[in-house]
Image (cartoon, rainbow, N blue to C red; front, side, top):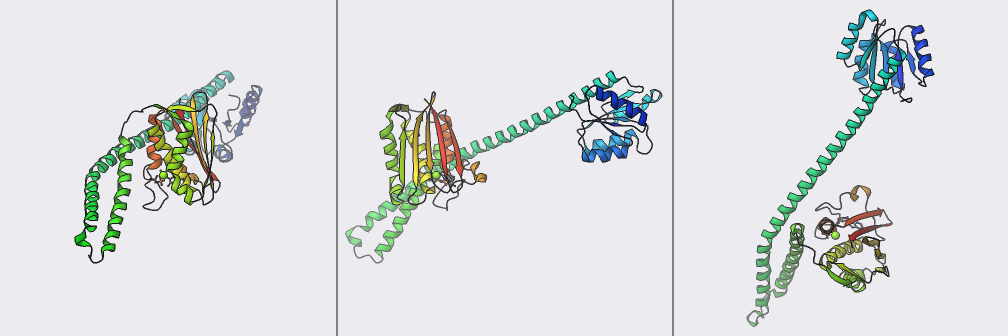
Length: 372
Ligand SMILES: Nc1ncnc2c1ncn2[C@@H]1O[C@H](COP(=O)(O)OP(=O)(O)OP(=O)(O)O)[C@@H](O)[C@H]1O
Ligand SMILES: [Mg+2]
């Protein structure tokens, strides 16, 4: 309360002298101005919480000053001072937005307690503003979450529908492939061109299938099926599954597994999906001959899994987006932007969490926690 910034405005110098002296005795350190214009000039340089202003002043009077202050500094509260015969002015002031008015001669205790009330109001208003901001933010987040949920449902619906024609294309391409091998077509002109085109169809179908499976995975509410898994073997199996690219880029993988973690109870299917996605991302980001670190740590309640790469890193402005569906920096055909979105959903369903730290040009670390 002693830090509250107060400004006294009055054209009577003697009154200002006395009141400021008394306020100082009580530990306040108020500013002073002898006219409305002086007060506004001072406000431009110094933030003020509470103005105590006389109403009747030559030039700009207290009510005018009140109007100007409320326009420019809406957080500042104003207490008006009236002569004892003119308290009607004070009522006008309250209508115009003053906090309250006091009649002269002023009793200092009364003034100090009024200032205290005005300061309380300022603090309450600030609190309220923060609360409103927080609520608005929460509401925005909820809207975003709902949008994501319906997007997921829509995407999965589309994926389901696309799966049928996809299967037909796949079968037909297979059938055409078989026919091409038949004796009767041994001399068929441009046979290799046909075979190449069929190869392209197969690849495209395979790609589309991966996408539809991922999309369907979003809404599947499969419950975790736990089993006891040998950690060392499990990790090796995952590295092997991501193996081709690791080998072709000559990436070195450095493993660290806490001794206490020989076996764990997890859902191997889901955890595998999570780790392969992260590992694939890390491999994509890592340059030829780079290093990757995999670590499994045992904490009290959780198992921590770290995947650290020495790749390009993720720019700050992307860090929040990477978990959004369809966010990808990869060229079309190389990434759907669904990997992180889907695994985040799985991790959360399993009661765990995922966290990312990244430094441009140095690398990225994803950390996942699973409850034991
Ligand atoms: N280890 C990493 N290093 C640098 N950037 C990464 C890393 N992991 C993810 N990212 C960034 O996050 C984006 C989204 O990743 P996500 O796995 O969701 O999709 P994707 O890898 O682009 O596509 P998909 O997983 O379907 O192949 C990537 O395009 C990339 O920009
Ligand atoms: Mg990915």
